[in-house]
Amino acid sequence: MIGTEVLVVGGGLAGSVAALSAAREGAQVTLVSKSESTLQQASGLVDVLGRVDGDLVADPFAAIENLADDHPYSVVGTDALRGGLALLDDVAGDRYRGGDRNALVPTTQGTVKPTLRYPASVAPGVAGDGRETLLVGISTDPDFDAKRAAESLDGTVPGDVRGVTVRFPRLRDDAKRTRYAKLLTEDDEFRDALVEKIAPKVDGADRVGFPAVFGEDPAFVRAELEERFDAAGEPVSVFEVPTGPPSIPGTRLRDLLRHELEAAGVELVTGVPVVDFEAEPAADGNDAGELVTKVVVDRNGARVPYAPEQVVLATGGLVGEGIDSERDRVYEPIFDLHVPHPEDRYDWSAEGAFGDHAFARFGVRIDTDGRALDAGGAVAFENLRAAGAVVGGTDTAAQKAASGVSLATGWRAGTRAATAVNQS
Image (cartoon, rainbow, N blue to C red; front, side, top):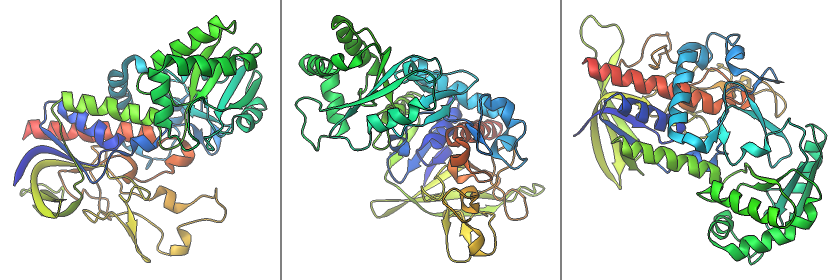
């Protein structure tokens, strides 16, 4: 039996924040996950609350005051969200930008995404200041049609937006984004040739946006490209446009968090799905349900038991398999936690791709301390908290709130788990 004070299950943003929060409060923390972090599939943007009822939100904290009582933000409070944001700001340092109001970040799809924190390499491209923009697409990358994205943005944001597509020099048609990143970071001749191709197309633009392929040190790449544009007589600001998976900005954020977790003494164990658990009644006089006493993981076919004092569940939602379903029920598969859902399966979704789908709100419910609740609204396990997409109650995708909910619930779960350990 492996002892640990706080066991975090899940290595995404919520699990990382929970583990780091608990460790910084002095707890001994182990983080286990069945696979690599999903952050490398994410954009690297940190969306807190971008839309409510379809309308853009400028001030997320003001909008949170009007959310439903069962929304995760309403349950854990804005202090938890600010705590999670403060932790992120400390981890990211000058690599991220943002304040208390959303910025509109252009995307490769030609839309703008309201987000509260965004990489510094993205900042020069934030929409709304009226500067003329040139978007540069890569002919071998079908995920970013720069001309089409520019046409869409040109009709929705201040300032002219144009798009061009170029063939990056010395690259095969099947080159991965990591190959672009490596050449941009390490090869002077590659940067020279690329700017030589693009400079004649700048034509007075104030800034030039590239798909997010600037590697591990985007500040260096931006400075190198800007220096070359300036030498070519086209002084511009250079920025990245966030892309879909595989995402280099998402990978950067993953690496930042991993570095901080290791520095804080968190034990990271990857490739070990949880396959079983044991619980026992809580102490007499305590009406908070049962206590999780053992969590069993599968390590290459061997059952390895952990004996945690506190557990944080951060395994994701329906997409991440943290929530599962059968024909007649929806449930959380590790601890069989209650997931509210309509009894009739036909009510789980609505007509139309963008309808009000009940499944988008599926997830466990939590109390103000982050503890998972049972079907009657009582605490299911006194020492089990939930964080991130496994927590339901709202459609975080429609609200552009997924990262913020992960920060708020992760910070709440981690700090309260550490407090419980310190008080035991």
